[in-house]
Length: 78
Image (cartoon, rainbow, N blue to C red; front, side):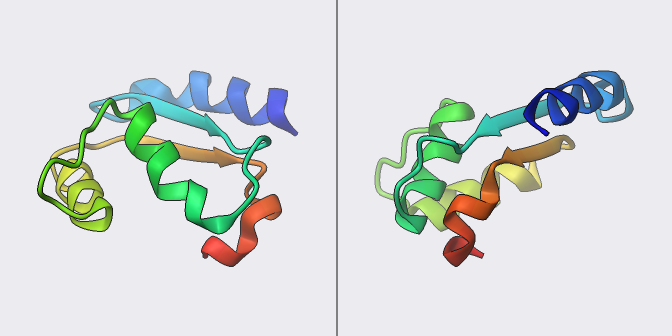
């Protein structure tokens, strides 16, 4: 599944202005690890903003495909 998801993301990246981002979640231990992992992948630093606010602003400014690989391990984050 991981290889397939990565290959599809790579193949489709050109359809989005800002490409595709594949975030592996296989090492995640808890749902609380999800937002920090996404922020790290985007090289975002919270500063005075909460992570949800920071990520919402970042994705409002981007057009990209986001693939969360192995999300089933932390399905509670949904």
